[in-house]
Image (cartoon, rainbow, N blue to C red; front, side):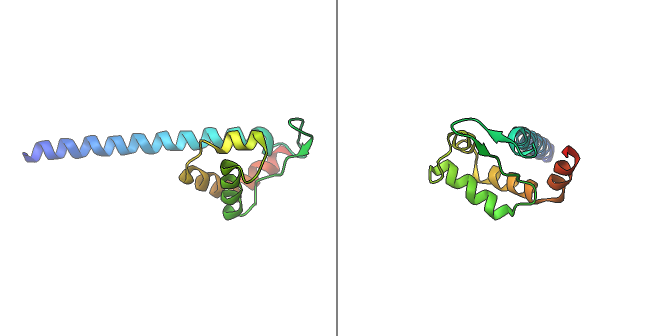
Length: 114
């Protein structure tokens, strides 16, 4: 393979990685927005399948959030809404979501809503 073909192949691969990274970032941002629909509202209570006070996620430890998501995904924790949300998440997505909610950014976003 010529040097120019190797260079072109490298550029194409790099562009694909950049696109994949941007796509992954967008996926995580969308999932964060989905979580905020319940967990971002102070003192929010669900009405299905029972009335339940939704816990805030901002400031929780990342390991705890990952553990909880895995438990919902496996069915160990039984809450239909959370099980449906956790089921398609990959381990990497769970970790990224957990890292976000454990970060100062999540705490800041919650403080703005009060």
